[in-house]
Image 1 (cartoon, helix red, strand yellow):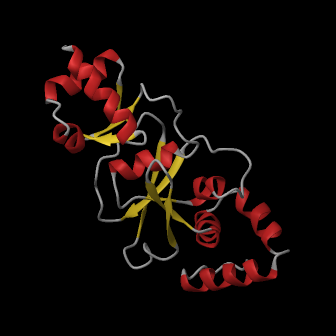
Image 2 (spheres, rainbow, N blue to C red):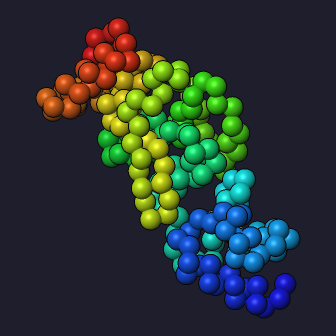
Length: 190
């Protein structure tokens, strides 16, 4: 490739904060062939269809890069359950897989370089408890703590009992948890 292609790539590092889309690359004057060569040479890392990580930039991927990349792949996806609790600081250890919620009717492909466990939620309760988390590298959807605990409790698991017991100490948070449980129609008592 020509030297000016690599010079254009340097300007991308200054302009974008890590993730760049195919549309942006094409708008900057790169061709599809140049993009694929840059991937082969290791200057770009393909994250998902239409999105790349600028490898040559002198910054590392953020700690929540999995969340950002899943939402680049499927903008309607929501980080849920144990993964949401980990990224919000409730759980100390990262789960072996990223738990992601989508609507029952959503069949978008999510081919990622890490393990994703997908949960299909009903359309009526899907939007309940979603927060938009914005970072300098991008944004992603994540369920709040109360919703995540309720989903863990509803779908059964061992972690949620410890979390509920620790939440019971905080009256305000526990009251919110009970309201979420009522809305989500969790029959077993928290």
